[in-house]
Length: 172
Image (tube, one colour):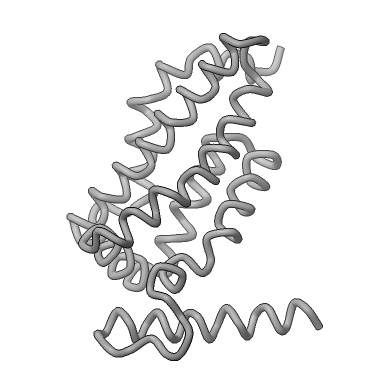
């Protein structure tokens, strides 16, 4: 029953978000900042699960494919977030959740101690910046090239910096 209730709440928030993106009031008691990020926890959890299940590169691609599946919605949504200072600021705050997930991943596979913690945070920040850069190019190009291609290009540029991480993941 909780799943059904949660699904209905998500659908209501999605409808309110669509109204907001069309310039209509989102509805009572819904702050625009919260409305635009109503599914944030689910996205972060999904990324963490995908990293555990399939590895870092595939998790990044899975996130890109997820956004691409609902392309028009996400293009409009991300364009609005980029255009509105309050929404950009809220997204920057929420990005800390992604950074935590990515930092835990890199720390688990990286060097031990204080240096390992620093490197894990740096690697996480670089990866998130690469993903956000791919999204900005996707929005600017109005969906072209497709987001998974842009994410793949970003990962290809970044991966040499993460070479030690990649090497530790190769089967022996």
